[in-house]
Length: 183
Image 1 (cartoon, rainbow, N blue to C red):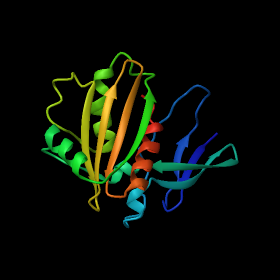
Image 2: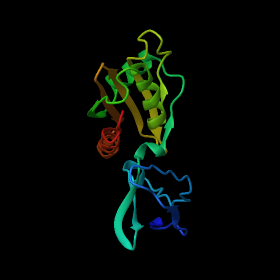
Image 3: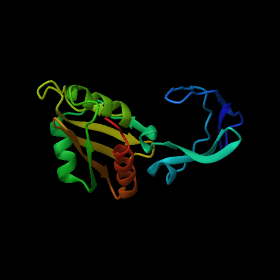
Image 4: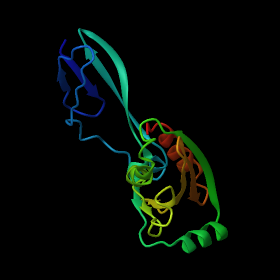
């Protein structure tokens, strides 16, 4: 069937080859991807359009790069620092609730996974709550501060995303990306 994938702005096609029904194939050969880097672009996810070709038929597809790829961890914050920030500043707020499907027996792994996805640091040591709740800290390349308040339950995780200033677009984009996660 000779399956191929190509993306706009990427010179080489990705040749996946033949896949039988029920088989899975991975490829790590994607990129480099041209990355938008102006202030407006760092507030939203980036979709790269492409085509998927199999057996002579072509279908459109897209590679969605989450806005969190553009975040930077904020180290050395305490819970008191975050409480003072949120009490004294102008913060937009957006929430996501994500159902846990594959992680129901490993809820203690959810916060470390979210730290990785959001490119954020866990505020404080996180040991008091057995990693079932915590605050994550990151910032955009242009200085917008991001705090994520996370509470893990046996079947779901609730995330309140706070962004400094009037960065409602960044907060909405982060929540949309979080809702795409399959945990």
